[in-house]
Length: 561
Image 1 (cartoon, rainbow, N blue to C red):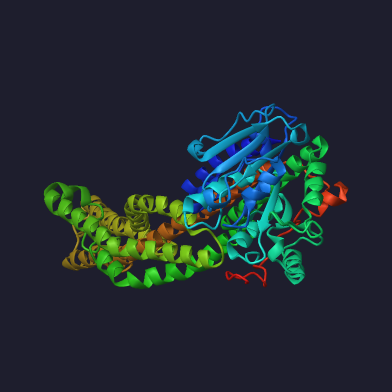
Image 2: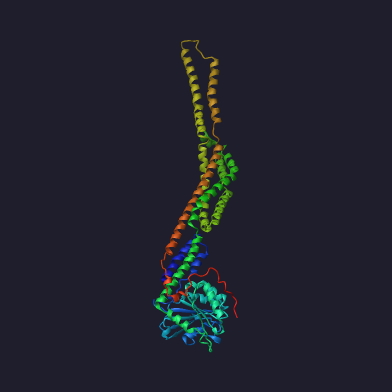
């Protein structure tokens, strides 16, 4: 059973550490795992059949050490004037009992061990703990170190100290992990109304019918009011190996509940699957608005960029001109690249990043862990900047390669052919007439071409070239408009790529969350339970099933005189 808790912690800690490093959990997550204890009374011993571990717990001056000495029948714990405030742990054990697994962090210089040969207490290990309400913080630390190793806590108070707030806070914090017995010591100074009041407080703390004993350790004790023997018998009945094993099992179950409570809070930090599923539609809506705003912010830069393409040479003689005007074209290319850089400048990507960060903040307000979301989205930002320039340049070049509409390009291409074909046809017709007249002139001296033929032929040739060329020039698609359209297309492609990458990151985020939750469920899949209803009634009276949600109303930090 003890190994189960140890293995649980060994599995949970690396899980929490990795989840925190990936932004799913905050830095306190690993600490919250460490804060849960794996210690049980059984972890002190290397044998399964161990003694019942009973600890005396209480404030300064309530008589814990005196009460322990009454059990032992000898002065095993320093008390009275010699030791008004307990600062060390006293162990009282049968000589056959060997404690072999004391934790390394225990301060050995603050522990005394007394052995005995009294077989009546052979199966009981008594522990007298320091005064938890001492001004010395080390006392409280020592008490908290020892509490997980105790089966039964004997909470000792006095008539004037039973409402002490320090003890109650510790009771409510550790109440479910132990069995509890309560003693009002120095009962010679007590009143029955104090017993009734204390019992009501215990009822409010979760103990319906607690074992409450009143003892008088004074030399002139009234035996009729001293319930020490009943108290001794109750403790001895618990020193049964079956009950010890049941208490050990219950302690492990309670510690697992504590761990589960911590892991439930960690699971809540990781967001619910429903919240992760809603991220993609939320992003699509958010990015659609952001894309429109981005387009509006760079419209004037698109016009400036497009104007750089208007004067670039094109057409049939472009290669020839490129040889003559190589430096000029190179300068024009450099200008267009600078124009793209001006369009996709730092301000553009700052707006993109700001939009992504705004989405992260919106997602956080709906319960999504912001750190892991930002870690994943921040890794994408550098890639957007490196790819966007080439994407914009490609889109513009593709648009310029096919300027205008499909119909416009068809007629423009047709007119281009006509600019050649019609003049050739006119020249062919004129050539035919000249050759034909020359042939006829060999037999008919009157056959000749007049000046009118020359004029008309010139007009025909001119119109055959001029009309299609004029229309060709007029129907030439605008490179500037094509460049502007390409820039708009490039912006849309960049926005689409960003959206696809973010959606892919969100999808993987959901998959990662499901995997981590599945790993947590596997770690916490222990089926160990204990039927507390099957425990003896006397033992059930000592157990707090569920601690109250709020501090007990009657508890105050004052004392009653």
